[in-house]
Image (tube, rainbow, N blue to C red; front, side, top):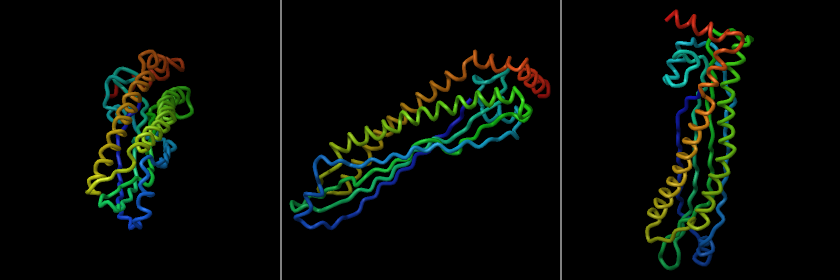
Length: 234
């Protein structure tokens, strides 16, 4: 089963740009093609085989996703990451207005600190170990697939918005940047909500009762026997 946390990072840079008057309007194209640079990130998993079934069950803290009678034998933890860098340039136009325009957008999206736990009661190299590890790899596959799907969506939606709204002409340049900041946050907030909801749904499809029964009964009952011994030792 997966467990995750969400980290958002924002960096908006506004720099006064002393353009010459005759060049100012050319820097404020009403329909700019703003480069949106997406960097997908998926850390290679690290593996922890030192935690006990009790430890992993406590980490999971979710009684609805257990392989055997309230126990969790394997767990995947990770931190979804979404970080922005949005340099914004400002120029003073001959008509007295301030023009703020996005120079480019850099986005890093994905998952970091990916850790797979398999209980230390399950001997490495055994059939039971391979079954639990295989189950956790299904969760990681979901994350990779979501990243492949949502990274292009983030790029496309930000580029489409900035094509129409990447330039602001206001008396107050700081206000223009604040408006842009809020709108970009709104766009990405909606995408993150969709991505999180979809992640939960697909991970739930991995953690089905049928899958847990399969793992529990696999390897001639090895997993069930290990879990039963751990339960008696509580």
